Length: 196
Image 1 (spheres, rainbow, N blue to C red):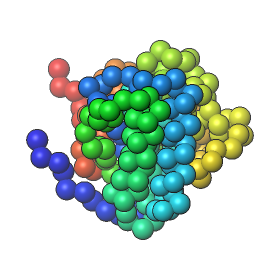
Image 2 (cartoon, rainbow, N blue to C red; image 1 turned 135 degrees about the vertical axis):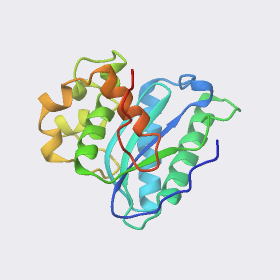
Image 3 (tube, helix red, strand yellow; image 1 turned 30 degrees about the vertical axis):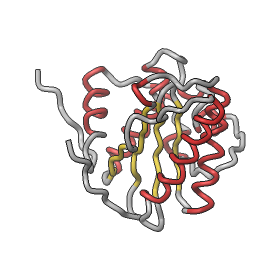
């Protein structure tokens, strides 16, 4: 399937994700992978300023919610993924490709969609049974936000969403989660309803 043409904009947030090659887990402890991610985000932001509202690291992929004021998502992601994969390869002493493919993105142009994607991203660790609450997963900006801890990269919290823990932790049904996951495969996000 051909790669979808990139939409460059400064108006809306993108959901961005990249998965490890062959969907294998990162070959380093999560604390180290998290620090590599932080350092890579700092480097990318220093070269291509971006507004990051969420970052969640999982065992073999990440989720990023980002807006690019200079309409340069491709340049930001090039620096971030290049640094991330270089450091992963170096520190794990691996020679193979780190990521299975280029990053995948979806533009979110609707506030209701944004709210649901925001919650969906933070609920990744819940769906994987890694934690019972979004704010308790340590490899997430939610964890830092709730504890008022600093991160080296700049991220912009969405106060009205992040302060509502009941909303963040109310888990989607399987059909809703599937509809969001499928919607995030589109260039411009929209729900994909299950027909069964």
